[in-house]
Length: 314
Image (cartoon, rainbow, N blue to C red; front, side, top):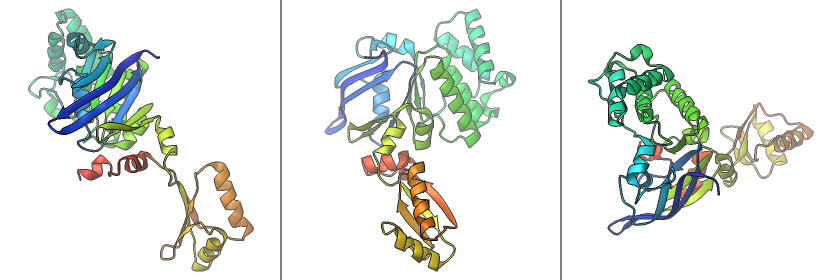
């Protein structure tokens, strides 16, 4: 077995008659980025709260950074950082003062606290804004400060709950770069997110939690391969060309109004080449084509029967 940043076995939690976690097993190696997905109410936040020692489990076991969450809570808390969906930044303090406050809470000496704060301000490109209050920051700057505050204690495991909610695309990419850099430094990242493309971009491994259990786990590309639905959409310039192509491709779904055919295809070069050769042999040429391969949205829907969270809450 690999060294685990997080190791969970048979974890159970219930609220009254509702079983939220029903025997969960997870193994997240050190330095990995792991994403936990699931519809609203699936138990993602409950899982994070248990692993961060904020909530006791009803059964099973969990170890974080080598420490048992039930019996070694202080050691777990010393080894982790938690960045929630809502910023923990104090808008009445400057950026530097927020970091120094965290240094005090971690019982760092005055000199070490200032050294660590200065280093994090530089690392997160906030040095020029260090003496300003976060009320003057952009959303991306405030989130970077929030992450910097999480790192003051030099955690080995970081729980990121919805880290880019509300950020513009450029700020999201900046946060992604920071998260990748942390993992490259050996920090274990446990990510929950409502953005399935975020999990696809960041996580080396994804688990889908639904109705108390893990319904699928694996690398994003492996999960996508389990889901049917890959196809090529062919657009034609005239009804005659559409009809000719439909005769050559009997398995295709035809849309006369849009002048398109939807052809089942896994999107590999070999499949595309075979498709175009069949059309070429028949003397038919599409005006355009687009390839659709299953993404994590398709995986999410196929496995849970729910729309992705961002659609469910819209």
